[in-house]
Image (cartoon, rainbow over all chains, first blue to last red; front, side, top):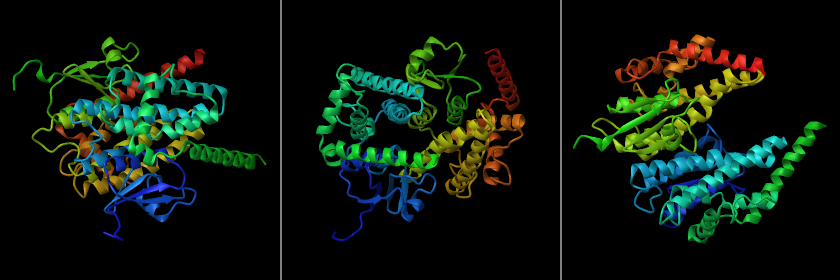
Length: 234
Length: 235
């Protein structure tokens, strides 16, 4: 239907955001069409503020006018609202619980370690952050090693694969900028293979931003922070 | 259904943990029987360490030998595994489910976090800032209650739902906190709907069966504070 608005609208960012990427991966996997609205987070639109008044963050998925916020919650919503294509969660309740556990772990332990590890104010904080990051990737390595399947979701990708897969460009960018590699052949060979496998997928090729783009974005943000810090000192 | 080992439920918990309490509440509202194991968190059992090797925390629900960790994940598991005769804890509408999950995450990530910081913060400044954030979170949750309940008694509507159980885990600590610090988390002026909800929820039989005594919790908190102060003084 030419000119018609889609029933699905995704509020994303003008800059690369792994959390927005997560939702785009899920939408692509489920073959869903949607309007992408890139919001300038330095100048938040009325639509964003109205759709997510509590957190004022992206991503927000608006489905027939109703907003859903928080990337992992959006992924579960998509599974509930569009159950017949590419389910993200398995059928068995125990396997679902395990998938939810690792999806939460990825944000609570892996993503949460980035700030302290890379921009922690003291050497202690950075060392502790790095220690947590290594522990997190080793735990995820263990899951793949025990599962013995190509993906966290088994033979095909699921919630955990999308949750972690969306973080690949940012992970690589972090490695480029810091000069330290956390996911490597020695420590985490299963994860290395999983990353390659994930990036080969059509949805990944379609959705994942280039590492260079993410590197440039982080550099810009770091420069902005340095300028702001200097301005405070004057 | 044959009896015996087919639906063995075991909960590893600790009586003061609001997270373990959430699971007890879910089991109670579903009318499920289970074996309860009280953990000494200073001397964790082999079973706890092997069932939750990643976080080594309670609660852990073990169902027919398989462990499930993290309170919100456990409650969803119970809901999906034991649909039961009554309404399920999570709504059936996908959008309402997403709203319930959103506020459940908010309760832990914003409300609980600020509330703890308001009493445990290292400086007076930190505590004051955390208190402000707590009241802001309460205001948001009050609005959420209005939206979710639609004029009915609970977040879940006529019957207790996922959010009631999630927030319910904090009810005894709310009373203990009031006794300890003179601060009522949901008071009649700032958050009248939530204030009424606390009493309403607490008076349900299924809740009364598992809610710990607020007086005991307050005594426990005082004891722990004294221990920590003594340890700090000794260093």
